[in-house]
Amino acid sequence: MDQERLSGILLHLTSLPSYGGIGDFGPAAYGFADFLAASKQRLWQVLPLSPTGYGSSPYSALSAYAGNPLLISLERLVEEGWIGRERIEGLPGHDGPVDFDAVYRTKLPLLEEAAGNFVDRADAATRARFQHFCDENAYWLTDYATFSVLRQTHGCASWNEWPQEQAQRKHDAMAAVLSEHARALTIEQVIQFFFMEQWTALRAYCRERGIRVMGDVAIFVNYDSADVWTHPEIFELDAERNPIRVAGVPPDYFSSTGQRWGNPLYKWGVLAERGFDWWVSRIRRTRALYDVIRLDHFRGFEAYWSIAAEDATAVHGQWVKAPGYELFKRLKEVFGELPFVAEDLGLITPEVDELREHFGMPGMRILQFGFSDRGAHIYLPHRFVTNTVVYTGTHDNNTTLGWWRDDATEAERAHVQSYLQGIGHEEEIVWAMIRAAARSVANLCIFPLQDVLHLGSEGRMNTPSAVAGNWTWRYGQNALHPDFATQLAALMEMTDRDGYPLPKQCSEGGMPVEEAARRAEVAARV
Image (tube, rainbow, N blue to C red; front, side, top):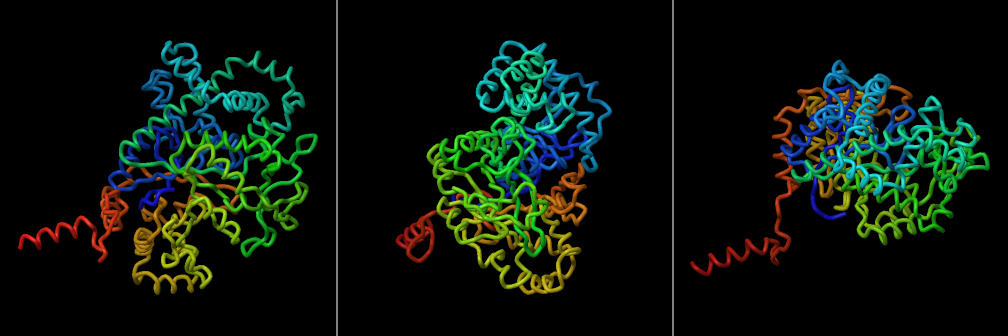
């Protein structure tokens, strides 16, 4: 990562007030990019853009490579002539939370219809562009399309519940799928083409305004995913392709039984023998989507919590070393500089810090975490180093105002009053935290949009322990008031996060060389 001072806003695409009941790559996304530019923000952080599985969570993906079809803008497809405007009338509107079930029922058939029209009507130049996309992404696209078609054929059942010859990818079964479902497979590929075309256009619009995109890579993948179905040899599976051991985290202050995530673990030895080829291809795809990459659960690259698949909790798991150094060394050999941010929250050992620092990755600091006791002061600005990303909060935390109102203890409130300016009115906590983050020495500074909008707990994106109601938040159509942009822009200028080219060299007295030379010249004339 470079050492430039930047600031950005965290907002997942689904939270945009787009037409159709869910945020997408349509006009609202471009309007938000304009807001970022007016606010002098230079990063847009999004959550994983993968097609979602269980719970509609961005971190519960059906593929580590594919894009989520629900993010495709039907309005853009109308403009491009792939579907008639009358076909998208009457969809859910711009406001209100996402109803994922309703969106799946209404939007996916329309995307398939548009893709079918593309197959039937695309001209030679457009077909050539589509074919180039297919060729460039052949290392994942055909397998994902096959997985997706079979999953729909079997009523969205997990792949291990399919007929054995399909679950285990027997040659004759796969040949039959390619023959019998040829059009459906092409339609799935076209939908991915739509996704990439629209996302590329949006990123180009951001780039023209000096805005880079930061996206997430979850360390583990879902069992019910195209990745495990296609590459069972790199995961800890038995002869029937059921998980042997799964991922999670050990018991801690928050949970006496830990967390059993259930993701299958990698066979790191096999991956190492193959030059980490699967990870190389995954990062190659990720670099095509984002400018900066946040590695979720970074500590798992140094050691991960391994749980027997038959265990109902994480209590009896064990730490197992991972070849993180060898992996990142290989990635650096292939890609050069690694644009990674390490999500190093939770139980972090010196070995995890050493791995991160060896490869120059910034770690994360969450201001909300810094006020509980002396041990939490590592999350406060006076303990930061420059190679850090500071957040007021993340998608897994309450909003800053919600935290202050509903979650902060009396001790935490007292500590905030001592450390920051006095908080006379509850809403003052939001800008006090934003200013503290922006003023810090951390090179990167991220604010959830909910904090910029001064939202309380009603704006929370995810509560990790909740089984329902997550990921549904969207901001209102008129929420991005120009006053917010003006206030943020002024703060970015004063904290040198607006991209202004600062002098890099200083004279002996600490004055910029250019200014010292100018003053010397004036003095000589006098």
